[in-house]
Length: 354
Image (cartoon, rainbow, N blue to C red):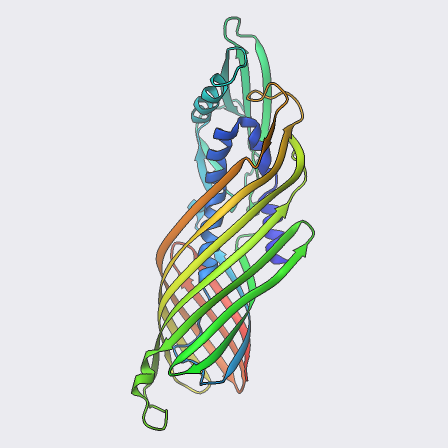
């Protein structure tokens, strides 16, 4: 439900930029969506561990985990230059069979000075729009004018975090190994469909120092971990103000990888843990469906329809640090940690050991 609310609010008005032409729409869409794709990659790579100590052979833990990733302020907006879009749209128009025309692009207030515009993580306050005009080359008569309201981000709804929530399980295999899995069953709420799965393997290095009875008195446990998470999501949205069509949806596929070195204390009730993580991943966002322009537009002065117009790719990698604490009350455990990096992620969980 949290993810559905995020995705719905984040894509409000997103498709209307297609009226500026596919080349301009691709440039805008990349600037608009890339920070969210990066944030989700870092989010999904987090939360894989809460101790350097692995489960004993045959032991099982069941975990519910909630995470939130915070975007730095510079990722909540990007600089949009109307004159740069003017050049792109003019070139696109010149490659059509339409009568010669001059294209101009300004903000809604008539300015052509570059300014900060919201990404999917930010907010346009006040709302921002682009005015695209075409004038006849010889007479300078106005041929067409389109006003495109630029998409808002999640900041317009008061959200300041990219969320995730999932089930996670761990099983001890023996020989210092613990296999982990995380998942969200395929869920559909309103126009949003989501599904998540992942797997990881943790090996406790300090198990090499166990005595013949399988115990050791070291004050810390040290492990290494490798893990992978995959998120599939789609948002089936209504027609925009400028374009209509059918089967319109946004599909997102995110892959996140984490290789971590982990250390934790070995106390009975309260323990502290930390890790150094190398995170890499990629995200693909596709705008699917049929898009038909309701009225003549500058770049599509004749009724036009486009299919599956955009496919956006984002790749990230980086080194992150994690610190956290775990409270153990018998089989009942609570954890909380914070991962530091380009995007910071807070994570909390409750789990039971069997």
